[in-house]
Image (cartoon, rainbow, N blue to C red; front, side):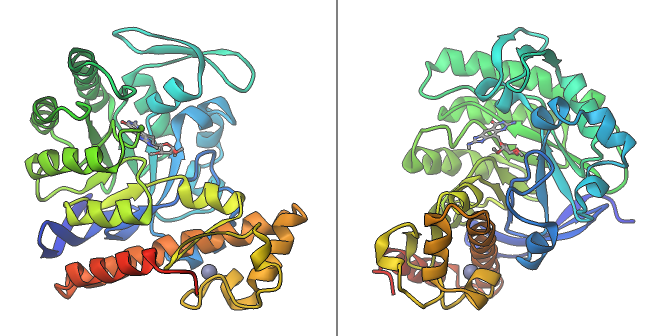
Length: 372
Ligand SMILES: CNc1nc2cc3c(=O)[nH]c(N)nc3c(CC[C@H]3O[C@@H](OC)[C@H](OC)[C@@H]3OC)c2[nH]1
Ligand SMILES: [Zn+2]
């Protein structure tokens, strides 16, 4: 079994096409990772997820520690068997969810104490506890336990938060159990402050990880500030390690971030939109609850091979959402994830052929065009 590593196959400007080699198989990059928060990609069977070409899915420490509990998942054979996914799984470390979901949380230098949003029970996360939970889940990629500050925030507050996260990164690395084909990613913090981002990259590369995530973004700063932060941060990150931008994003975010050297992404948009009747297409998004779709016999997209597009009409999806039928979110989530996977394949092929700028121009023109 090969050690965990990423190989670069081709570059086009700052963009890279590569292959992530893991204990649970290889993943072509750039890659979009469907969010599987509580051991399921909401509203999709794993066969549907596999059919979209997704290579790696996400799990979450915060959610799984609360329910069903990490020890139970371990006793049941780990998250792969539990959710019937034999490919790589990346688990987030839980800090972000505690700050956004947990109730009555208390942050201190050692970790965070919080109450479960499910039953109000008290729990604690520290770098060690989070890393142990991800080990119990048998995560292929473990994320460092960090703090993701809300933006906007004063530079000295961002600095203090980043330096806490860097101390937690060292403790997370200490607690990590190295296994062939498994990796741990450091998470760069520092808000939108270029000097703090540089300090964070240095701190993480001094510790040494198998991959590096860019955290602390997609928290309301907007695309322009996000891209500006990537422009100064990504060039400082190790070239031979995968770069993962957390929580991002729209198709346009993904394209612009790949052009800036990012390899891995996760975002709830395609799955959340699938549950709220919003369809992603080559010509932007559609609200399938809109009456204009009521008698439209065409598929959501003429370029898509998902079940919704190969068997059903927009009129049918419109009906399912109007009738509040469970099949609506199932079919549309499948379509949206299939769209994101097809987009990443197109981007990867363009990098391999040195024509990413041309693809970017045509994608942006199409996204702005009127629906068919
Ligand atoms: C939306 N914007 C956004 N910015 C983020 C920034 C950070 C960050 O700095 N540190 C950490 N640790 N996580 C972050 C996250 C959560 C991603 C997870 O959130 C979960 O999606 C809901 C999913 O859990 C399966 C995913 O797992 C990697 C962010 N999300
Ligand atoms: Zn489709």
